[in-house]
Picture 1 (cartoon, one colour):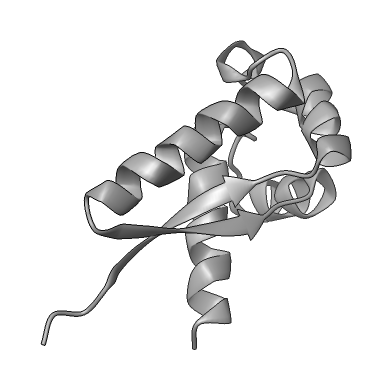
Picture 2: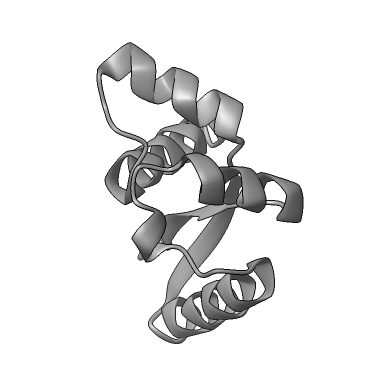
Length: 94
């Protein structure tokens, strides 16, 4: 039996999204508004599902992300946020 493949997807509330826009170390990769980001994220979820991958939305807050990055000496960028989302997903599924 094949195990289901899951992918952690960093997910933001509208309020947190605007906070990340102001504070992230990679503002150039962010959509300028929440609706655009959410639309692209939902499309990514559909594409992953078509490939047999379950995208699991992992909510991130700016506060927890900055603390996580500070403890590990990382920048608040896409790589770090992805790593944090994966870490949180692993913790949730144990």
